[in-house]
Image (cartoon, rainbow over all chains, first blue to last red; front, side, top):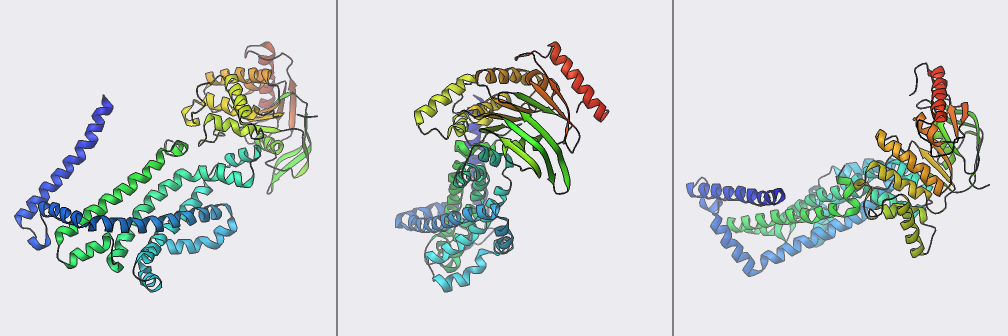
Length: 257
Length: 242
């Protein structure tokens, strides 16, 4: 009973906030606080959605952006986790690479934009490169830190039960760091999405970021808001997708202490 | 002989700190020895030597047979179910059905059938320690090392766990070494109690208890042993039991 009430509240309260937001938006639009050409009405945005869906552009731009984010993100994760494990386990690797990793982590991926265009041209590869940079270094650092916090007792158990080196990696190290790694993936996936949109705005020929700039150049503020709404929704959906990983029974322990 | 332990003139230094000094201790097959002593005197280091996690700086450690360790808490892998944790002790058994059968037997032995697919966090502290004991007993291990296995439990659960341990060892006899702060626990479970000195650890005294297990805490020999060990530690620390 109480659970049902909470579910209803969880649906109703955000809907109420959204409704208030739309009312305020309408009031501001009607009051003419901003020039009509610079501030679309909610209705115009709804019509804009219809246009963008009908032309198929919204879908194709969304797919393009998601493709870039997925490729860049997965490549960064696939390389970042092994690199982080290696640096977490080997002191010499940590000493050698940590300063450089920290340096690149603090360098905005967008600063690489000129080189990304020069090296890869305008298109998928340049955006993926920037997404890769925005994810790879944080994943390396977070994985390395997670490896460093694995309780020694687990390695004693592994040794005690005769686990070989590769088994220690697959049966102790990786499961032990997974909760922290998943948290990092959630954070970095959000960053990757922001970077992708920014990259497409500056140097794109397609994708949602480019659509934002295209709408701006065409003074179509209604379409601009449409793209913004879609970008926000996809960002939330990416996070909701990754949060499912925290429900996997073998990692749940990391979120319940 | 399988299951025997022999520490001969063992000394251990961590950097400049001498943790154990010329300690010799022999443990026979099937014997249950408890090690007590002041906090930080090197009891856990002694177990780590036998388990092979540490090497002696001087002297030798001989251990015949398969050694398994039970920890104070969190020795179970939290990402693995009860079955998966116990299966760790049965890795050498290739036949999957045989492994499953043995896991079933162990679960019945520790009386937690129905929790096979639970994770450690879903079990009580006492159940977790039982699973850890089952894992350590699995697969015909020879020596059971226990590092304060019940110290994180409440008093009543500790009392119950002592009886459970005595029962498990009567059904699956092992050479056992128990490190504990709880002198009553040592006297209730062990055949022999080794009292260590302050660091660097040496053997201060040994007590033997002949009453067969299971023993009640009120058993006269247990009560007498507790009194004598306390007296021994009082002489040393001047402040009673730690």
